[in-house]
Length: 422
Image 1 (cartoon, one colour):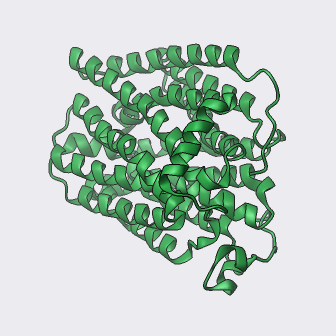
Image 2 (spheres, one colour):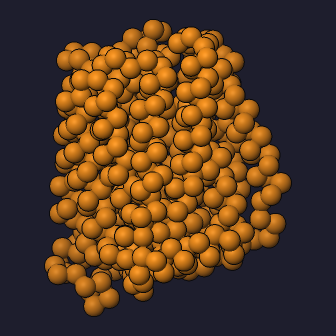
């Protein structure tokens, strides 16, 4: 996993680092991987207990979606301003602020006694997420470019996805055992510990190495991003794929509620291992891809189709092994999509506005999440809180994603896109 880290010495005059020995010894990919490891553990330990914890403090099925909408709504509002700040002020500063806010949000969750407390925590978490989103990937891309290692970008993104998936996998198993022995709130306490460690590591190791080669104002970064979206058909196509994939939000909230009566609290951890094992395999597959960086259109199409197929079968099956298998397929598709999209995007976006464009792309994609969550909230308000309701939402989402795959295939870029060595 570390074999791609070279011994190329950092050109400190380009980066303005104050501690050159540390910057040479500690490769930026290690900072990226460490952030993914600790962040993955922090989210993993709550993955199997999150919805159950919300139900314990008084939420119903509809309020589960409302709480999640508070998070994604905040992200939508904050994505673009934080991305512009990252390019205009500092990407490292943005990731550090975001990591601290994420830890604070988990502290609020630890103390939450009702749905209002959960919504406050999600609001803070959304701000923190927005500060990190786009900035971390842009920081890595320009860090590797400065070292002459830009060709390793997709492999690094994929390795990061693998590390995060493995961390979430083990975190989910750990969270299930902790919740079973010490209660659901103990998972939130454990999450706070890992988020705090992530914030400390980010403050310590993240340098100014990944800042833009050309520093432009926040407004100019926005102008360039806006112009690029409408003049680069392949990027517009990838943006549409990201937006339409938003219907997977309906999976995030209900999987633990659906499986708990079948397998129990500890059993949820083992199902989580199976699901995120599939994500890890997907990351490995992306890492081994031979396609030129910036030409991942077919991979993106396949990942959307696989995600939808898994959802569709999960909506039909009743057998536990078949349900788990279907959702492993679903998670594999999702696991491949993010590193493919990150690589595709950063091979076509200039250094000066990487974070702004990535945040702009993320903002639009989150509209898909908000729309899907709103539709789900309406559906649950019209039906009973039951397993059949959950499977109906999965079934609808699966059909929609397969239709989206067909449309994206017909509208895909017809000619090979020139890879820009940005």
